[in-house]
Amino acid sequence: MFSKPTRNHISIVFEQIGAAGVVVLTFAYSALYEAITSGQNIFSEEFWMRLVYSLVGSQNETVAVIFGVAAVFALFFPLWALIRWYKTCFYIDGEHLVCERNTLMKKNSRLPLSSIATVNLERNVFERIVGTAKIKLDINSAATASRTDFTFVLSLEKAKAFETALLSAKNVEQTQKENKETVFAFSNAQAVRHVILSQPVVQYLGVGALLVIGTFFDREVLGGDMFTRSLPLLGLSVLGWLTKIVMQVMSAWNFRIERDEKSIFISSGLLRKKNYSFEKDKINALTVRRPVLARLSGLAFAEVAVIGLGNDKKETPQISLLVKENELQKILAVCAADFNCTGEKTPEHKTGLIAAMAKYLLGFGAVGVAAAFVWWPLCPVIILLGAVFAVLSHKAKALCTDENIFSYSQGFLSRKSCFFKYGDIQTLHFSSNALMKRFGTGRITLSILSHSSMSVHSTAWAKKEVFVKISQMVTNSYNFKN
Image 1 (tube, helix red, strand yellow):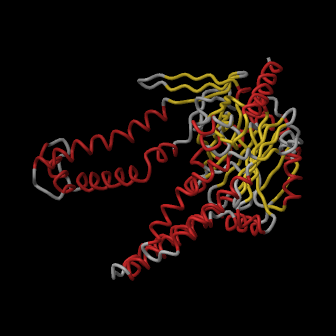
Image 2 (cartoon, rainbow, N blue to C red):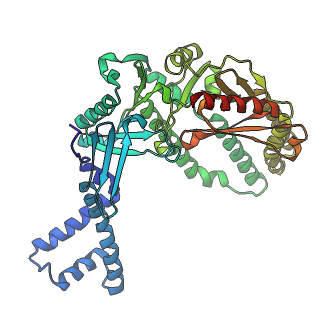
Image 3 (cartoon, rainbow, N blue to C red):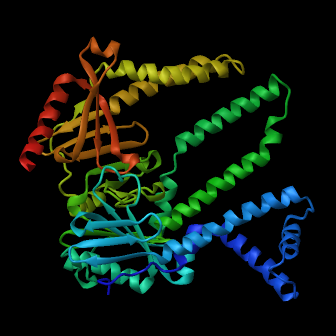
């Protein structure tokens, strides 16, 4: 079916011009239709000036000319989008996917099917109404790691056929449904639990505390009524937060993990359907997260760094929702068994406490000074709280290495553990400052091939010998590959 040039579904034009473009086109068409049906000569200057005056609502010629120029550009964009759609096609040529655009700026891309990292099928509300779906392809490329490489819009039937054709052309015959095995199907109650327990409650509590202190200071010292005047804004903020939670729940709805011999398949979404598929050997890193509320219930979830998985619209690249630790380990044993560090954890070097104290005391000290204007005993209490946070943050950081995996852990409230294969580490740096150099310690910073939010990692403070050891393991891994 896709061996011959194929165009995207024409609905892609409306998605590109957006809702505002559709409104402009509809309004212009209505005004033009009304003028034509009235019997006026559409080729006369008088007709067009009267049309512009009626749209602008002014008889000023300067305003009318400016509006006319703007209208020409506004109408040109949808026309250009239509031409670009008509002149763009794609097809599968043997072991390559070919994309051609024969507009003024001609473009021809030949993508080896073997370099495709992920094949994602998505459907938003508009696409579900018109019966279409998006196919998103991403490749293992550092240059495009923060965006989707290729996007196609097809009818739902064609989109599924195109997905199958791409995977079949890559010799991934196991994409047939009967050969898939369900790893874990999350209930909708678990989706709601995941969203609620993943909320950054510490940030909300911090903002709330600042609002309380500010309101108290405003009322007792300045004699104002900031709280009363802020109620509408607070109401909108709460409404926005609740809307965000609802959208997150709909995104996690019907979350399901499937697998076959080589690939992982993830699907979720209520209004906006998402279907991700990627080969297990394309995983560049694994992150296990334990939000503060989830830790109280012994829950955790996992993310994976895969080019194209979760990089569009800054979505979280989750491979699971919140589950009990033993259930998560069963999921990871199937989906990411290679990312298991068997080495002994090494706590952060004791000099890391100096950096933690400097970081937390600076921030909490500023808040404490501000709070002192309301009630002076708050200042030492807040500074002491900062010192406690610094100690806990230092104690929570650790490193772990074995022959295949390097990992680090951090976070004393919301905890995070990241795992990397040495061969997937792109860059490795050892950075320090004037004070830490005296102790021979520094922070290890590494980068992997991933989207922007997971590409760069900074670990705990450690001795130079630890960095040298990890650097040697990375070098040995590259030599082994070559």
